[in-house]
Length: 284
Figure 1 (cartoon, one colour):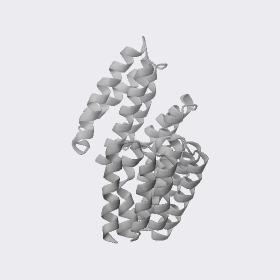
Figure 2: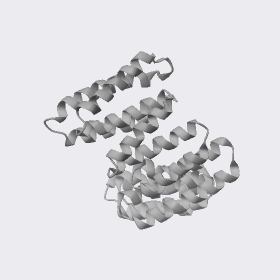
Figure 3: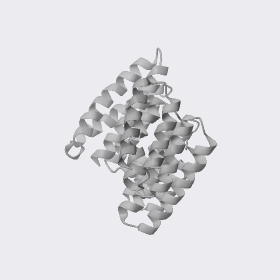
Figure 4: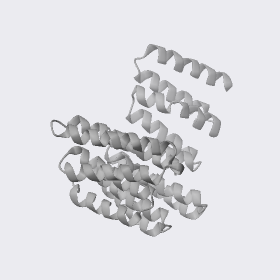
């Protein structure tokens, strides 16, 4: 529970900051109310199991006040999301569903807000033990909002659910579907941010299932399609983990290192790669 609250809190902070940048004039009073609610939210997130009811009620009251007083502000969007979150946290599921319905009716054209709304709906059903209903919500999230952080992560979320439950056959099918989804999304959005994320998650799906041959292919494709310092810093460690430790293919690791050497202009990085190449050659 604490981990879930902290993750949602982090997402909401990002949303708040993004919306605040767009606000002006009349946004300021609403943002102040939201800021106070977020400070209290942080206290609850630090230790949610012992948060007194009055503290939670005060946050909900503040959010409802913001929504009623400043309905057309950017801050009200975040207030709606936080209100739904608190209602889920306190297991007021009927109220949470009503809030989510309001969110969907008011912000149906906002991809980010809608992705969070569908995630909340699925999360409620999951907490209630109704996975089939939760799955329907997550499928909509995956298919309609793949360009959001929650949407693109949904296929792996589903697969991990089955793995955590020990349902091996369902997990295998879900991981297979996730891989196909990420392959297709990566191909359709090659060179774009969404394609990069999908390709990264494809690597993750193969690593989690121990399919290291496919993981190696996904890794090589990442370096080929997205040659950048960010990609190298994030995924370079996988080269030897996959090709040397798991597959015993030092020559393939060397090949990837050489390809990266040819693409980077960072001389220190080139020297580092040369040292790794010499090390792998000495192992043969």
